[in-house]
Length: 138
Image (cartoon, rainbow, N blue to C red):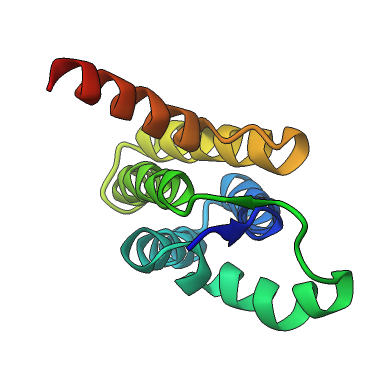
């Protein structure tokens, strides 16, 4: 079943803010929260993430029904990529080296920012590329 395209973009806006605060404060706890949000989105789809829940309950009723839909697999893959980067960032912030935490969090922030501001989902594009390559190889 396809999903409302505005949901993942809303999640990217919240993620951008959270990751920017992580970079400014160096808060491993906040990055742990974001890692959990990515994990839930990767495991159950973006609708199962905390930001997906917030979108469904608080935002979508105020902005009306969706007019555009997308397949759920690319955003779910993007959540898994975000989980990977946030996990590496969390390791860097908690165990070191600190530059690893900053670099991985910065990369995740850049991807979230692109989606939030321009509607360009790097993880979704990576999903489509991997899918094309595996179809050709198989």
